[in-house]
Amino acid sequence: MHITLQKSKIAKQSSIKITGSKSESNRLLLLQALYPDFKLENVSNSDDSNLMTNALSSQSNLVDIHHAGTAMRFLTAYFSIQEGRQVVLTGSKRMKERPIKILAEALQDLGAEISYVENEGFPPIKIKGKSLTKNKVSLKANVSSQYISALLLVASKLENGLELTLEGEITSIPYINMTLSLLDEIGVESSFIKNVITVKPNTKSLKPKTLTVESDWSSASYYFSIVALSEVGTEVTISSYKESSLQGDSVLVNIYKHFGVTSNFKGNSLTLKKEAIDLEPLILNLKNAPDIAQTIAVTCFALGMSCNLTGLHTLKIKETDRLVALKKEIEKLGGKVEITNESLKLEPSKNIKEFVSIETYNDHRMAMAFAPLALKTSILIEDAEVVSKSYPTFWDDLKSIGFKITK
Ligand SMILES: O=C(O)C1=C[C@@H](OP(=O)(O)O)[C@@H](O)[C@H](O)C1
Ligand SMILES: C=C(OP(=O)(O)O)C(=O)O
Image 1 (cartoon, rainbow, N blue to C red):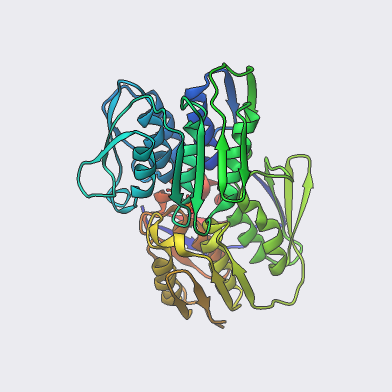
Image 2 (tube, rainbow, N blue to C red):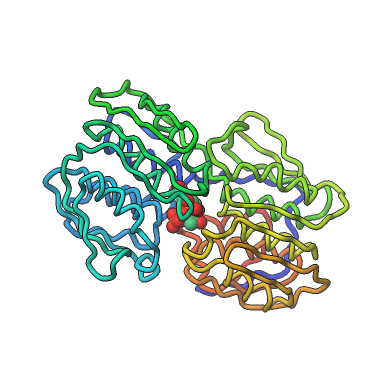
């Protein structure tokens, strides 16, 4: 489905309720499968979380997780410890290009039986579940934090727990801390000292409780961008958010001050407001918040600002090569972008071309990051349904605040 976003102006005040964080949801869904004693509220309605739920309850020996990176990585660890179960875990064409070797090798070192069905180091993989008794392993920490979270999520169910040594620079650290905090919330003990994470084994059932998933901060980024591109005084209220979040992307509150967006909490509602401000070039390392890089690059382009974003090495192995995709699409709109394997530099630009058709490369964040541009010019978004990976009601929500969208 290709859609057109006519040049739009949003209401002076509006509000949106955003679905639960897919990162928190996919961790908690897996933990709930291991510890069925707790209940969940505000679970994400994203494709990736639905795929996770279905995979965890599936009795089939073929599990397909489509584009869901967290599901692929977390389930690799989960099925490795399901004694007596044999599963082939597969995904979309792109998922078969997203590396899994670092995680598979760490699990194999712990005693897991994992083999490759097609290409060495990539999904699909065949997993023969068994009880793992070894407890010490090291892995490279600069490629994806999801490998680390996957091991941590199952660690308390290993006979002797886990002592995990992280080698090299650690990427996307807030996601590792999120995993450890959620373990703590359900009563699993862990420590993270220097580059060693230890998780204690747990055979007890946990105290019954209800955990409420905070709404998704990566999804919130599109509203930060929308407010940044709106008239001074425009307000958008988003919910349900916490001032002290487990999600690293909550750093948006600080980053968007640079664009004149102020954030005020009232209970679990967060009001974003555009203030008048002089815009300065943006220099930012996003190694701890890779998922908001596209949003920020497009905000800068729309405001005619220059930016120099670094720490983007993980973008090359996400839903698409996001660095190449950003360069191509921003340049179609008239911008000038330089990329390396870990950075993106944007030159200030004066004009934005009208009615450009943005390719989305099976990447939800390409569609959502470019949508706010409709506040500056009319734009087309190709394969707009990709948003369902993390935020299925995105287009309806934009319509509700005043975006003019037609099929
Ligand atoms: O653990 C998680 O929930 C995630 C970790 C990050 O991946 P990397 O650690 O591969 O950067 C992030 O990009 C992804 O969207 C979600
Ligand atoms: C990278 C992402 O997801 P995943 O790696 O879980 O597919 C994302 O949602 O931006």
